[in-house]
Length: 109
Image (cartoon, rainbow, N blue to C red; front, side, top):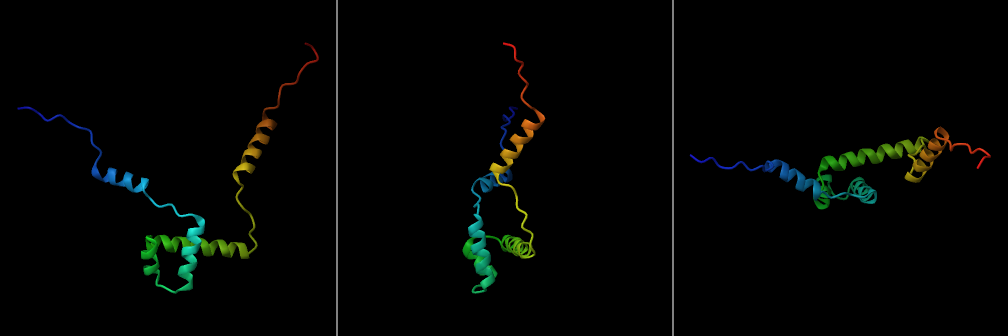
């Protein structure tokens, strides 16, 4: 009897997961705010809004919670913010110069 050669194929679930990740819609902050505010207005039900926007209701509710928590912190006076990329690079460069100073030059040539 001849045995069939074994092929190494990824299981179908992994292929589907990979495709979903690659084609996932990434929503900008502005889109999230627009959707949450639309839901808070109450013109449509949350289920209907989510169908129109193509998102899961659980995703809407997590965005809504984040939005309201951020507003609550801001109103409470918590003005701390995350450093932007430029600030982080500057701080890292400063730290590097502090811990690794340039070698001192002697007066000799």
